[in-house]
Image (cartoon, rainbow, N blue to C red; front, side, top):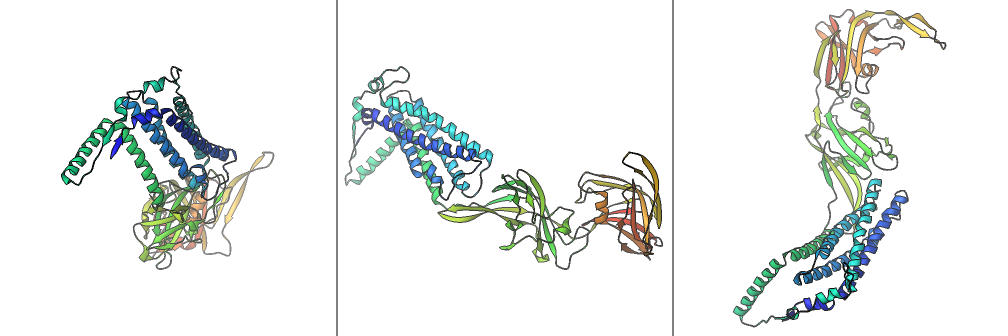
Length: 528
């Protein structure tokens, strides 16, 4: 088989090849400008556009990629010729690097356009793609002029026609023929193959840079088409505490518990447990979003458990339910997902499955999901955290309500309490009055207990809410503890004192304490 060196052909048709390269480069620039136009219109039209299934191929098609690959092959051929003739190659090597980067950039843009069929692109992302597309077309103008001037025989630096072609005169060795013969002699054939292999290795070593560039191009093209044909796995898994994007929203599962206790420390019915996950939610869209808690499924042995819609009130110390809530645009909130479990379903780790739209894999629409691995704390028994005497400060910082401190002093048990208060009229004239707090005369079994108090809170919890939800009295009778309820009856005009109504049994008891039970954490103030 007779092979000819390509240099004579390249020199003979140097102008035509450069003109073809200029045409291809112009086509690539025109298609790139179409991408710029799309993103510019998308931003101008308030992030809306004519988007439909498969619309991305209208802007970035296989022919677009093929034109760039053919362009690269031609540029590499010219570059090899210039290297052989010892001519400047910087401009052509720069164009090779640029068009390789352009292929990678177009592949990223194509993915963004495909995802746009299912989700709304953020304003920041749309503007970034628009600006990068504009920047990507600017070098193409230089390369189009380079190929065009070379095709016309025009030296860009010296403005002399025909000099480029004269400098590339055909030498005797440029058109040499290489004879390759194959005979039935096995020894000669093996020798010839070995010789060809050695010469091919020498050739690669002498042209290592161009061979590496050409090989990289072929590899990129092969990987691209392989990635397009292979089935894709769009699912992603995140750990508890990690913020991640899910369509127009961002989520972070902050913490979680598994418990059989409500916020007062009361047990649910037998074999009734709940997994409670607190999730932080950001709305990155341009509209208010209604939360759908059914999108968050707890996976247990391939079974999907949906959040309960009516049990979150039992976990008010942790937060509010995500059910039937909204998140305003460009805002965030935290809320609770509550899942009903049995004791057999309790384990150390769980996985929550979140729907994340759909995608196309091998021309088939498939659902996308994000998974979150959570490791909840197991809460089953009440533990005493701190016990103080009246007049000493009590802190709830180890509980779910956070850094809240209270000090109750000077306890007084009575059936009637008289106090002074000040009232100011519209003219800002103030007078002092007396008021009386009495128990209901029909309730002979009730008494009032009055405390002086100091209170500080670094969270949303108020003193009134803490007494309403978590407080109760415990009294001792015949070496056994009994528990009674507490009612806060403090009038608005009374300052620095709190008035509680409770059972009169504490007067005749051997001793009594005020308890605050916050789920599994118990705090005690010894009064008598």
